[in-house]
Amino acid sequence: MSKKRGNGEGNMRKRPDGLWEQTFMLGYGADGKRKRKSFYGKTQKEVKAKVAEFRHQQAMGLTLDPDIPFAEWADTWYAGHQDQVSAVTYESYRYTLVALKEAFGTRKLRSIKPLDVEIFLKAKQKEKSESAVKKYRVMLYQIFHKAEANDLIIKNPVRFADKLIESTKDAFTREEVAILFRQLPDNRLGHTIRLMIGTGLRLQEIVCLEQEHIAPDGSMIHVRQAAENIKGRTVLNPGHTKSQLSKRDIPVPEFVRGSALFLRVNANPYAWDGREPGSVYNMRTFRAKYTTMMSKIEGVRPLTPHCCRHTYVTNLQSLNVPLEVIAGLTGHSEIETTRGYLHIRPEAAIKVSETYSRELAGLFR
Image (cartoon, rainbow, N blue to C red):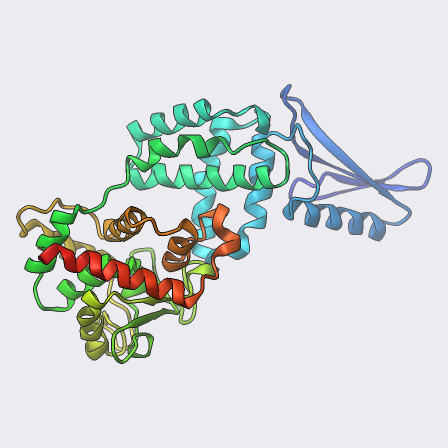
């Protein structure tokens, strides 16, 4: 007597000795053969409870096999990452995860070396966009970081391939920043670009800033929500940000406070209002306007809006700002190594803002 189970959980059957048994597949071993695990109990309810507990421990990274294949560990990481990002972002991760599992699949997690990661990323650079390659690298880093933290591997191989992916990031040079600050118009788009360079705000964060999110003197921005594109439409889920760590307070460098105040005064109710009352401006349309404006400014490369954020991070790094402070200011949930230090002291953030302000001001001397 047995009962079929869904979701890869195998069959529930009653054994000749009277015990109930449920067996399901855990993945594949290094030899390519299927790995199975069985649970036993006097009742079906007891077996189900054991299975549920095992699944919970799997998701928490507590049930570990030193010879675990990459694909199996990647699924464990994915299951445990669901509460870290929005539902839309979590769903988009699935497609990146599929590509990684196809590349590293049944290989033992501990057998994957930095060279393997570099070969994979170099191959993807030839066929995918910069942003897609970055997603592969970031997810690989997180998967291996969790494995390192749980003593499944000695060191994270992605850490030694960082230089490869870092080289694909682009940021405006100091000279380009100076040109932009001089030539960008005194309007909503011009001030938005200035503020993105000065604070590292994401596009989806800045378009939905409300008046109450910007300090009356422009000295602080409170990130409390973010927009997202769904099937070509830009929508806002009030009070929800890109990730749990994206809710943050950013001190605004003195040199760009005028831009923050411009957006505060003109917010109605958002810094970038959509056509419909109470809606947010379409981010695709914003990018088109941004691209058109950039094409008219000589001496500046036509980089994407997100490169304003790269510029902010690059400049902070050049000022020797600690990584954990940068992570806190930018709301990077992806910097796993600094996760325990993201609650930075307000005085540290303010000091960074003052230093960065002097850095920007120096461009015009």
